[in-house]
Amino acid sequence: MKKVLITGGAGFLGSHLCDRFIKEGFHVVAMDNLLTGSMRNIEHLFPLPQFEFYHHDVTRFVHVPGQLDYILHFASPASPIDYLKMPIQTLKVGALGTHNLLGLAREKKARILVASTSEVYGDPLEHPQSEDYWGNVNPVGPRGVYDEAKRFLEAITMAYHNFHGVDTRIVRIFNTYGPRMRVEDGRVLPAFFSQAIRGEGLTVFGDGSQTRSFCYVHDLIEGIFRLLMSDYHLPVNIGNPDEITILEFAQEIIDLVGNSNAFIDYRPLPVDDPKVRQPDITRAKAILGWEPQVPRAEGLLETMKYFKEVVH
Image (cartoon, rainbow, N blue to C red):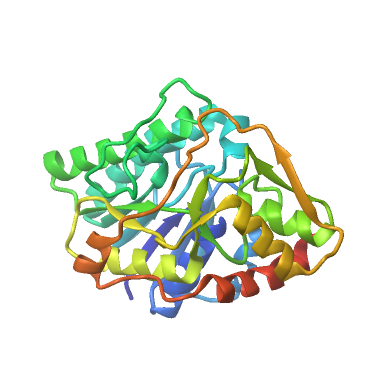
């Protein structure tokens, strides 16, 4: 049985990755310090003999006994509210955590996939964003701790690949949504769903003309799995190119939830908030034969069911 270590395994994406690898017949070791992850996301896996959980911070030395075939590094605060609250931890998990896991991959001769982000493109001057675009990032701005942590993660991963011959993969993840997102995450979708369900104002920054592209979590996990199993080591965008303005998106959520008390609440635009965000997925299509399959209407319906259970 192949063995995979998934860091951030109790998080939104990490827990869905645990599910997928269990389904694929792997022995799964989930690792999380529970800074932003939740045991609720993985408690259904604990009875399984092929599942283990390590409560551990990857910025400290990481050891997993025995063979290890794959590592997926998904440990990191991932929403602006988190990395503004935990700037040092965000930088450390991107730098020290990635260094520790690349060292483990080298020792175990394991293939490692690291989770990068569309944030490496910053507030992009190129639209849509392809992997060849180097980005427009403010290193000393409030979002710099996350953007630069992920840019460093990519750089050190390529260094280990080129210098030590470690078998590496890099995924650049665009906005993703689905069940198990944290209610108080601070990202647009959990905020909109919880506000609409409670009949509050949906917080729209600026005039709402900024765009995002939302990918359903199952589509994203499929793309990540295909990338891990491919032989391609340069960064690959995984996301849904179906672009929508934040204002249109807020209206979609209000209509879907159907709470007549919900309304649009306009607020000033935060510093360095990207105006556009849309992946160019030409590379993923060509190399992985991957593109998103779940329409937004269908994905939002599944996500709403989850939020109606957890929002109080």
